[in-house]
Length: 135
Image (cartoon, rainbow, N blue to C red; front, side, top):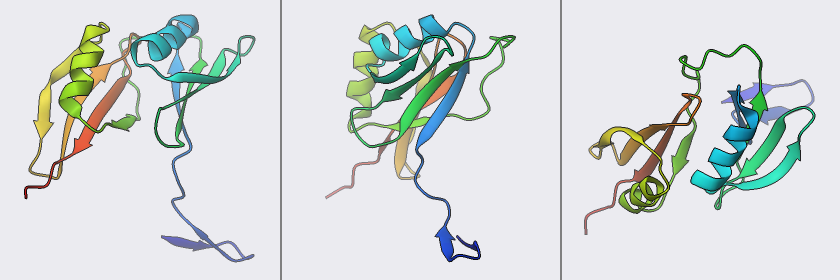
């Protein structure tokens, strides 16, 4: 999609840069995303309870931000999708770290396979892989 800005044309959407996840237990969320999921801490502001995390591949970042008054039973409205090379291996590794999944791996006919998990605050994330092409 192209949108004219008067000074030229801007392509939209651009790349996804950062997905912000609102959390009520900020220190616990930082530990979970770094220790359980294995994301790398890029930047951390303890006073503002904000941090940015990096994935092993790609440039998109995940940010965790503390917000008072969040109901932990309500899921987030956006669901970060995390691409992996081998879904079964990723699920096995994360289970060994104590991560629980919501149901089984699903899909395949659409060109990808996917599984959902919840972080400790009830935020849904999805791991997916593109379906292997048959030779």
